[in-house]
Image (cartoon, rainbow, N blue to C red; front, side, top):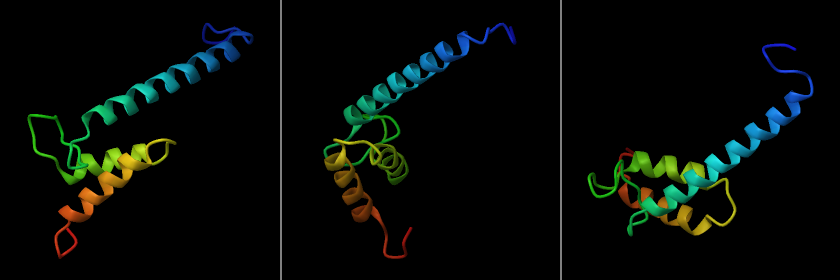
Length: 89
């Protein structure tokens, strides 16, 4: 037994960690979906702050790697393009 984990426990531990990570990710995606504004953007705290590029870019980055989120990603990217200034900032 190493670190309180016997060899047979390591596979169960790996499965538990993987399932917990998948559950956390699905909850995060659901939360991001619920927080998207009508404009396609996200804010730091919906209803308290205006939509901004930074939280929108993070949400787009996370959602772009998951099936079924293409429309939300597209709306987020459209906001980013509208919000970008002529100098690129």
